[in-house]
Image 1 (tube, rainbow, N blue to C red):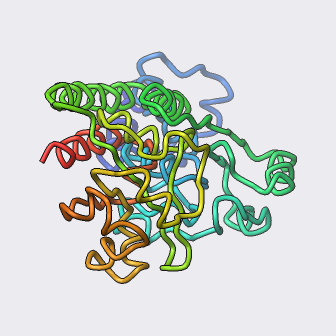
Image 2: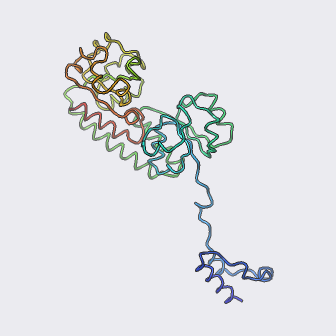
Length: 309
């Protein structure tokens, strides 16, 4: 009987790991315990096959970028509209609305098993509805600093079982930040930088302190020309001229909205500033500059180099 059973088991393996139970009489199992050798022949299901992969909805551009950098893009079923990088990948995802104007119904229609939201996602009524559904919901704190960005990456690494990948991403940030500091240490003086947020020529604001733009300017070893104001303020010619910026900093989408690079120096008051006279302005990718995601170190280094030239 043992030889007979062993022969059946081996033939089953060669047939594609399917055990031919039909070939074994029912009476055998009624009267005999299978041997340990026999049990060892039967392949066990792996832990990965037992546990279904999550279906993720990511609410926050930096979070989506981190999740993709960790190799989980195939688990993403939906993202918010601030998730714009990498473009070829995020263009394939269903959009669930703007980060601060989300709909619970639209998100839940995707049947997610995990919702990851950056702090500040809303409105609060939507967030409350999502929390009550029973779907796993995780809010990741947002902090405009190197430490805060690395904490986000570490949190997502722990949540997705990618701790080593998170460590590698954080090490790369540290490396780029150190390189930027070496460059900025050679500045003869801190350049004064004016950040202009534009959404068309009629929506122009300057960034003061306690903004992500302010944080990036300082991380690049420069000085915010509007550090004496709080948050974002409407742009006026008088204030711009008085600020005496050496460099104008803008987002690529903002520049597109005003008609292109040629329009930057024509903005209110710019032509009468050191930046305008020297035609000095820097344009960077929106999410890269202000997202504080996995490309943070790269963004700081790029800005520092631009300010150095």
